[in-house]
Length: 257
Length: 104
Image (cartoon, rainbow over the protein chains, first blue to last red):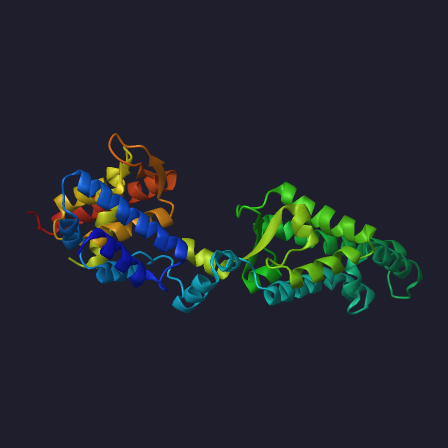
């Protein structure tokens, strides 16, 4: 067998088992080995014989090369057909996961408030800071529930504080995750995939969510919702402001550990 | 030799080769083949790829004195830590085996 045939057969045997980029990499490497071997005075046929049949090489690479990051063949063949954009998208957290995580977190964050005011689903008003503060203030002043007004005021403030601090504190302590995100196996990371910094968390949660939603009376979160629905990477306003993106870790994690 | 065991040893040998010098793929494969002639070439190449995928090594293109540029492999900090761990485990294993009287 000669070089050209050998390379072509490697490509054929790997196709569908690796991504286009990986195959390109293998082809590059074997071409380099040919170059070096020939420069050493070896014959193409001789090198081919030493390396074995391309079919066997492909099998070895597929079986031994991926012990730590074995990827589903079916997913890969789809990725191959659609090119590299999908490869990147594999990384991106699915929308249903994000939405379920959002609801879990919103319920947890709003739980003390709900118990306090007994307004269930009041947590949906969380996006509207002024509405909520007015509500709590009114509740503190006019409610007929037992306890001194002062105590009620303190409980109200603590509940509001918990509601808004829950998410940023979780993101900090759980390194990009919250309880909802833990369950849904998704994680917030920086654009480049590295770990969140305090600046990212502040920009995303305080500027991108709290401030912007309050100033825009919730329009920002509506835009985020629609944008997440239609954009390929499920972009949201707070992710852009925070310089972050949300990734699927059920795969990424198993790859590395 | 059991394949998992062999692979571990080969990983250790390759990383050890890279411990203080950068090398290109062909060179690495040749050195390993000299010590382990029975090892299948593509197995060595698969290990090279895996070490890189796991960030134990990184590559860069360098001009060679003869011919086109080559892909050089270099050990990373993570790779060094991994190598040290493996060498330690290897030492423990060898002395344990010796302790049983297998010493040839």
